[in-house]
Length: 210
Image (tube, rainbow, N blue to C red; front, side, top):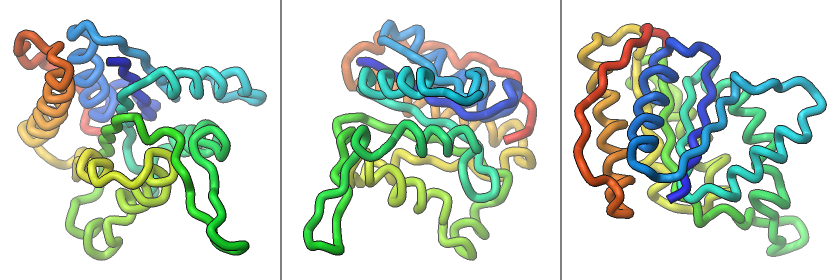
């Protein structure tokens, strides 16, 4: 299986990067499956970035399974993750509009064969985001981005997981968050009968920032 991790956090000691990303990376890396990483805040985004965007597109085409990891800032993902959506998942590459009438069209996805998992971290608690804000971060991501390029799949909703109040919860809670990630990755690896031996949980040091 060809795995691609796309991580969008500028701070390497954050829970999102040194917790979630490192957990995903370590498990896949020791499984023997193919693995590539797009580390958005380690690449140069200076313009022109045509070659970089072309590289990203080639990695998306190459991949069979994609992991997207980002914190939530101002009810969106990080700026570079949003740039990735805007400049990589473009019309003609990731989807196209198909007219039904002269004034109405629907998006036809070109990447619907990809298996996608997403992990996003919040500084906010779940209750206000899911009620007052109608779960808008996840709703916009799955319905407004993923449905266009990966198609209408219920799995995209359930495989987009949110971790809440990351800077404020206990270390024990954050370890539970990581156990969710670890179980997901192990299940993914079992799908191809490649995961042969349950590995021990590796202690990861991180700060409380999302």
